[in-house]
Each structure stands twice: as C-alpha cells, then as structure tokens.
Amino acid sequence: MALESSLRYRPSHAGRHVLVTGGGAGIGRAIAMAFASRGANVSVMDWSADSAQEVCNAIREAGRGDAYPLSVDVSDYAAVERGVREAEAHFGAPVDSVVNNAGISPKHGGLPASVCDMAPEEWNRVVGVNLTGAFNTIRAVGDGMRRARRGHIVNMSSVAGKTHSPVVACHYAATKSAIIGFTKHLAAELGPYDIRVNAIAPGRIETPMVLAVDAAINDEQVRLTPLGRLGKPDEVADLALYLTSDESSFVTGQTIDVAGGLYMT
Ligand code: ADP
Image (tube, rainbow, N blue to C red; front, side, top):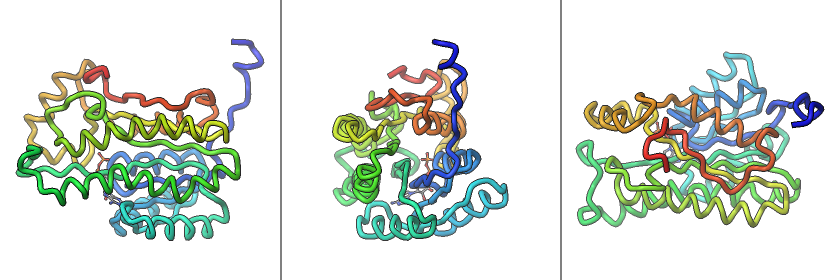
C-alpha cells in the first residue's frame, strides 16, 4: 500500500444517521451503542418501546451521539415507513446506513420445532420479521439513499443460513439463507448508486436469547467453535462498523462470519 494511502485520514461515523432494527437488546443493542460511540445519530427501532427507550437513554448518558427510539414491528411496512419519516424529521437528515438486525427464532420447550409440527402461522411470522422486515426498512430508506447516491445496508444473516445448524428451526434457517441472496441482489442493483450492501453471519453469540437456552446446547456449540467460547455482541458490532465505514469501500455483496470458526461457512 502506498504511504499516502496508508496515512489517509479516515473519518468515523460522526454525524451519520444510522437506523438499527432490533436495537433494543443483544446484538442490536451493541450495534446501536457502537455507532453512537463513533458519533452517529442512531434511530433505535424495536417492537419493545421500553427496550428502545432504555438503549437511547444509555447512549445519551454516555454523552456520545444522539439517539431516537422507535417502537415499531418491522414486519409492518406502514409502521416502518412512519417510523423512518419520524426519525428523519427528528434528525433533519435521511438515513445513511441501516442495520437490519431484528429477528426471532421461536423455540418450543427450548428446542426448535420440526417442520412437521410447525404451525403455518409461526412460519409466516418468522418470514415476516426476519426477511420481510429487512425488505420493509430498505423499501423505506432505499429511495433516499439512491437520490443521495450513497448509503450502507447491513443485513443480519447467521451461520445457520449457510449450513445446517441443529440448534435452529427450518423457518429461521430459511430466512437467514434468503438474506444472503437478497444481499447479493441488492448489492448488484444498488452498487451503481454507490450504495454498499453486505451481511453478517454470527455464530453463537452471548445474547439474552442465547443465554436463556439449556446450558448443554451452548456448551456443545462452544465445543464446535475453534476459538472455544461464545462470541460477544461487541464483536459483531465491530464488523457492522467496518462494513459501514470507508475502510470497506470496495466490499459489497458479501456475507461475513463472526463465529470464532464455528462451521467455517
Ligand atoms: P439477538 O441479539 O441474538 O439478535 P435478541 O432476541 O436478543 O437476539 O434481540 C433481537 C431484538 O430484536 C430484540 O430487541 C427484539 O425485541 C427485537 N425484535 C424482534 N422482533 C422484532 C420485530 N418484529 N420488530 C422490531 N424488533 C423486533
């Protein structure tokens, strides 16, 4: 790398408007906090009004970027669009970056249901949140990004979207695989507008959802993970920061694992 290039000034995320869905807990919370720590204005969208508010309070108390809570179910397009317009009016700026993190992975007695026992309504609900939820936010912010000729989209996939994982059910796996294809398509479609679209495939991460399951399940996942531990939400947030920064300016259409080597997909 040429010296001038390696000494290039690299601005952080200061002043950017970043929308994080599912920002109220776990990985999404860590992502919202990480963007705020880099000076971004963060819209925290979560269907739990209390969680979104708590994260925004934490951001303001830390005295970093500003934060705005949105109590929205991402599977409801009209509500997403309303929330996005409200946040844009609050910050006086369109969304520059969106992280589609909201997701659900229903279990039955702590275990994933078999396809043969799954209620069709449960299948539709998971598709509605994990996949259509990502479409909904992108539909709501995409035109603004296209007009600005800049933007970043980060979608949350999973290692369970790349290979079989025994700890999730088929609806979750199917949506996380679909996110990978959706990400590639969007990268091709929006690349000419300088909008980059990538996805993250976390492995087993220490979130409230993961810590709530039977310890034996997590122990087995750790045994299969070469780094020998659960990941931390901050380690996923670091990749989201990278994928929305100038440091990744030639990276698009990729789904990158943060999994300590689990499955090495
Ligand atoms: P993880 O951190 O592993 O992604 P969590 O369950 O801890 O999983 O966090 C997911 C977040 O997404 C939670 O804050 C949850 O409230 C949020 N969420 C789940 N479903 C929706 C939805 N339909 N709309 C908005 N937020 C959602």
